Amino acid sequence: MNIYVLLEQAIGSDEIDLKEALTLQCLAYCTKNAISDIDISPKVFKAPSYASKCRIVDPRELPARKDFDTPEGLATLIHAIAHIEYSAIDLALDAVYRFPQMPVAYKSDWLEVAHDEIRHYRMLAALLEETGYTYGDFPVHCGLFDAAQHTADSVLDRMAIIPRYYEASGLDVNPQIIKKLENRRKHPTVAKLIDALNVIYEEEIDHVHKGDRWFKYLCAREGLDEHVYFEILERYRLLSKHRPHINVDARKEAGFTCGEILKLGAKQCQ
Image 1 (tube, rainbow, N blue to C red):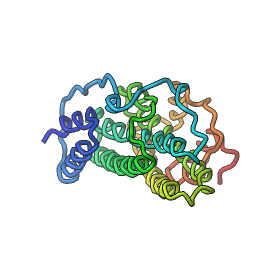
Image 2 (image 1 turned 90 degrees about the vertical axis):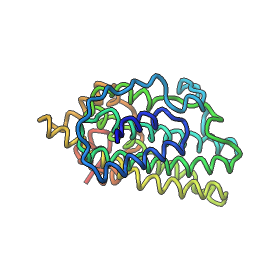
Image 3 (image 1 turned 60 degrees about the horizontal axis):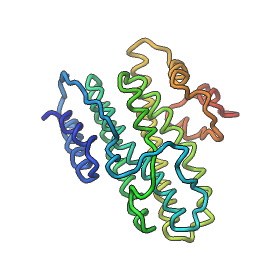
Image 4 (image 1 turned 180 degrees about the horizontal axis):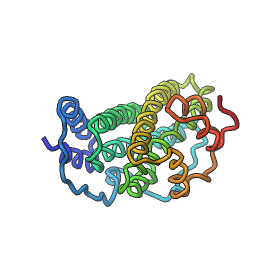
């Protein structure tokens, strides 16, 4: 079986059921087979798979997410998080598809991540329907898709930028969202959203840890000091981004050192 044909189909499809079926098929194959190197020329995707569902706009055009007391206000928040999880599905699949030279353990890791992200998306899509909306009812930006495009030629950059920067930033933000929602927990949908965010938070620590492990594997393989992480962030103009809160404990659990965490802006780390 050529899993790369299936992965290309999964990444390009906007049907979540098909994405899941193909992801599970590839994962089952990877856990039972040693995959030989295949000479492939990965496709350059011109647009994200959600382009058929969502109106893509500049991030500055997105609606503000402040009023969670109305169905529409709550829906905009759920939609924004659902969009991140949907985007993360394709990012995880692309990490396998685009870098066939990586070990089978790497492939299995990111296929597992993709399956987690599919489950996360389904949870949020169900909550979105409770508010009377569906995925695609609000505009979205394609920042994560662009990041995948920019890191398409380097698996080291991909591991540094996607799991070790963007997903790790989610570990900083997720508890802050939960905190803002806590005083609205009596609302049934809000209570379910908090529960979903807690599940996502715990599993995203593992996802970041997978990225951390493969980033360090690549540094060792290429004879690079792990401090190259900051050189990569600088090159992508991400190092100077403002970080109002650094989740020290979650980042440590995910593999970050205190030296890295302090350099990212935390006031203390022990």
